[in-house]
Length: 103
Image 1 (tube, helix red, strand yellow):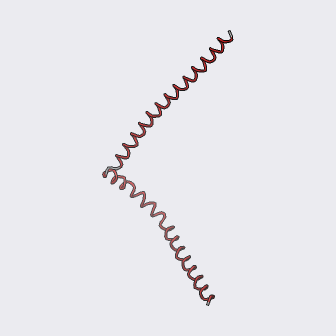
Image 2: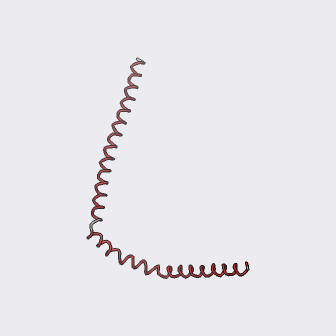
Image 3: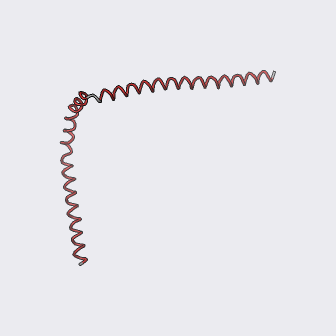
């Protein structure tokens, strides 16, 4: 009787292992299907964007956005350039002072 119970337990364990293997295979198939579908969509989008007409339309679409952003940051660009020039003159002045003190 004990042998029969042990055999049943072993059979159940083997069945569970086989079920897990089958589940993994099905998951891989589903993943491959999804992955292939995603690749197809990705390739289609890239091909679509590579067309000259689409490129021109995208440029025309983003021109106002980019110009608006540039208009907003122009004062900061000028300020940063001014600070770079000021720091250059400060370093130049320090260099001149060092040369005079060295002589």
